[in-house]
Amino acid sequence: MHRNGIKSLGAFLVEPQFTGIERILERSEDGRGNASYPVADQLIEMAKTCGFDGYLVNLEKTFPIFKWNLLHLIGFLTQLRLALGEGNVIWYDALDIENSINYQNGVTDLNVSLAQAAGAIITNYKWTPELVQSSKELALSYDLKPCNVIFGVDIWAQNTSFDGPRRKTWPYPGGGGTGTGRAVAKLAEHGVSSGLFAPAWSYEHFSSKQEAIEKTMWTGEPLPEVIACACQPSEVHDVSFYKDFPILRSALEAPAGSKSFFYTDFSPAFRHHDGANTAQLGSQSVLPRRFTEEYKDPILLGQGSEGSLQVQLDTDLTKSSVVRSVHERRIFNLHMHNAGTLEARICFSKQETPLHMQVKIVMNGTGMSWK
Image (cartoon, rainbow, N blue to C red; front, side, top):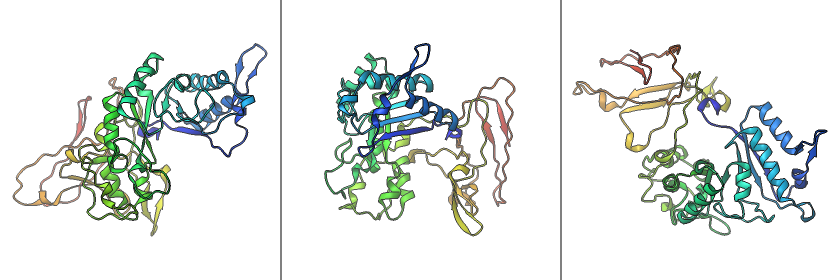
């Protein structure tokens, strides 16, 4: 994930059936009177050893009454934040300051001190725009950055095939699923962040055309005419606004690579190798950025027979009536220092074509280009 410019967080989850939650609050002191929390010490050491950045802390269970100590829980979260850095410890909106599981769906007096100690919070997903605004104002009064106030969006909420209470996420109706981008856009308007619950929805809910439905959600591409799922009616996913509010329209793009190094050979995680389909997420290289439907052009990015990346022109452009056309596509967003010592090596090949075609690769901001 780091080579894609994305943080990697571990999940520290305590569910109701777990035992020993009170150990989180245990505190020890060294000979000089410095206090620390042994569980926090171990979590910090794990993160540094394994190379990930921080934690989502989700306590879905209350502490035994005789062991409960709010100040110790705040101290535990503060130790994690100071060791792992701002924005790398995220508190989940479940346990409140009264030792109750009480989802607030926003930042309130019952969770703001825990959010402040951690440095960031992700809320439950049943928020309203009004609650978003009041949450932002309260967070600012506690010196919490709006970007570290993350509102949950339940992608599964669009489904109708549920046993028990209907799941719910803004906007009502149509939230979640193909309507996820509408919530992301609304949260972006308020200057806060979005946290997507269960982003594998398209692959877990539908029996076919999963990749096309995922593209619908992220880029606004048209929903397949026929989709197979258990929802009745299945048209529940064909919300009127999905083309206008794909997730990528409002999402911030993280620069790929680091400030001093970037490499990709376009290797995907899934490929056909030695006569069999294989999957290895660790082998995936940095892939080109996706585009929303409104920015589609005749340049297609596809996967070759052995998993290699292919860039090809739409067949309509190969007609002899086309005299000249120029198409540009920005495939990577980098944030690298250029102090006059930046070196780059780019290797590519061009298939034989009856058309005269020129490929030009430009690195904006450097004055460097290749033909």
